[in-house]
Structures are given as C-alpha cells and as structure tokens.
Length: 442
Image 1 (tube, helix red, strand yellow):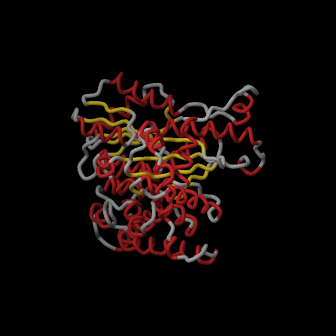
Image 2 (cartoon, helix red, strand yellow; image 1 turned 120 degrees about the horizontal axis):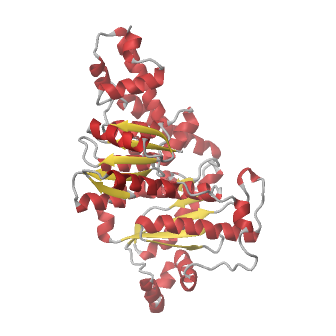
Image 3 (cartoon, one colour; image 1 turned 180 degrees about the vertical axis):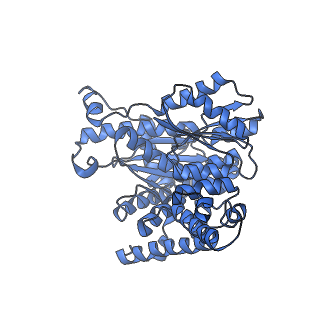
C-alpha cells in the first residue's frame, strides 16, 4: 500500500485528483493534499509519503523548490510534476531532480492514472531475499568485471594519478571513458562482511555476488542523472567516480554537496531495500583536476572510517568532519565534544529562528557547515528529537501559550509561529495536541 501527496495551490484540482486516485483501484493507503509547498513539506516530514504529485508554480515555494527540499528530507520519495506550461526549462529541471513524469494541464484522467500506476509498479518491485538471490545463481556463474579493460587503470588513477596521466596511452584510454571532468568526486561503498545483526558471515564468493548486485543497483541509480563510472576496488569495495564539466558544475555548484548527500542516502536506501544490506558510503569533496584523484580517494575512505564512531549511521561526507583541527586521530572525548557543539549550535539557531516562515533543515545545516543528513543524525542521537519535530515542538508550545493567554486571532498566531495559512496551522496543532486551537480556547 502506498501513500500519495497531491500538491496544488488550486484546492479544486487537489480535490479532483484525490477523488480520481481514490476511485482508481490502485494500491493506495492514504491520499494527502496540500495547497502550498510549505504545507506539503510539513506533510513529507511528518508522514510516510511514497509519491509526490505537485504543481510547478505555487507562489512562495515552487514545485521545483519543493522537490529539492523533499529530496533532502527523504530522497526515496518519487515525484510526478504537473504544469500549466509546456516549458522546456521547467521540464529539464524536473527531470534533473528525478521527476518520473511531467504532465501538462488540463490533465487527461487516463494519462494521469497511467503515470501514477507506472511509478507505483516500479516502486513495488519485490525485494529479493538474500538466500533466494544466492541460491538462484548457478555454481558455474562467472562474475564479470565492469569495464574489465579499464578497472585496473581507474584503480591506479586513484592511487597515483601523476604516473597514469604522464602516459599518453593512458590518457587516450581515459578519453575513451570520457573521464574529462574537470570537476570530480569519489564515492566508496563498503559491503559488510556479515549479515544484519551479525547472524551470518558471508563467504568470499557470497560477498563478491553481493558486490555485483550492489554495483548494478548503484549503476541503475547513477545512470538516471549523473555522469559517472562505477567499478570494483581491489579491497572488495565499490568505487564511483562522478564528474562535471564547467557548465554543469557552475549551473548548480552551490547545491552539489546536497545532491551528493541525497545520492548517498538513495544508494543506501535502495541497496538495503533490495538486498537487505547496510552498506557504508563515504563521499569525498569536489575538486578540480585529475591530479587530485588520490586525494579524493583518501577522503572517501576516511569518511567511511567514521562508521566506527557512528555504527548506526551509514552515509558520511568527508566535509562534515573538521579534520584540520586535529594533528592526530581525535580521541573519543574530542569527537563527543565536537558532536555536542554541532547540536548545541543547531539548537541555538532553531530557538532563535523557529518562527521564521520557510525555515528548512538545509538552513540550519548551512549555519553549522555540515550536511543536512549528518546534522539530522547527530540531532536525533543527542536530543532524542527528530530535528523537525523539535521545530514543531517549539512552534506548538508557543502557539498554545498565545491561545491561552492572549486575544490574538488564529491567523495572527499562525503568522507569529511561522505558518503561512491558519488552516495549515490548525491541522498541525490538532495533530500535535489532539484538539483544535478553537477547542483549546473554549
């Protein structure tokens, strides 16, 4: 059963699409609606949404903005975009953000339902059990190396790029791979040696087969929107080199780290979903030039090492850790102090800005110079609260005080605690306290 969120600033369209979905016979559990991007984002944060159907032009937060924030919150949420304009630029941006379809208003009912059906069918692929996966492969199966003639060269490039680049023949091979950059990032995927809860140690053969399956899932995800090459590393890990040319990097350079964060979490989510594996993923920074390949490789490997400190977290970005502050490997106490400082600064920022309209986790993370993913993890680990739950807690406590102790109207209270519409405020309030603002006032 799937949960679908329909977003449009025209309530009649929301109602019409909801009714259409409800009577479609599709495997739908809940249909939620929202009339603005901000309202929709709260729903995505608070509910388990599988599919987002959103208009593209909605005032303060566009459908494109909503998609970006939704991906940061939950990268696995799928999206169908609807628009009154057949504009190439909008369609291109939507596809770049992973939209599964781009439909033009007025919508054809059958076309809309076909689009939703296709997305849900792909999301509902059965998750193969590991035992079935292993037993289904004949003993004579021979594992093929991806890009067999280039894997050795790529691994050498990650160890000593100077030697590789110095040879003209190697440069020609790299050119054939279209490994030209000039901007690069390295991702490392570490497949565990044993099953979840350590109940089963994998044999060398089993682990190679799991790496093969994980590599194929990674390649399928990467091929959708990334210029990348995925291959095996000698130590049994999977390596992915991502590259950007000058134009594609400049188009969204400020958001590339967020995109890498989303990618890492999507990789972990999908490999866990289909293979029941908790792969650990290390993400390097982005540097310009093939000469920095060894640096990027070390960064991704070092990022993975943080799983030793945070064993219940699986996606690590090198830039989240203040490596330059330590002359040697930091002690447990130093790591604990640094983590507490990040959470303390985040709480201080939220305490001062929780009533700001359009406040996002990205805003809080940016002030702390860490990725939203890592901040969310640390915040929950240190406080027991999901970061956005903490924002709602402050907003609800403040609004309750105003309802009980002032004569402010509902729309005034909603405005003061960061909600753009009194209806949306009332919906959140009732979900939080179990009664509406007017019932509390009485």
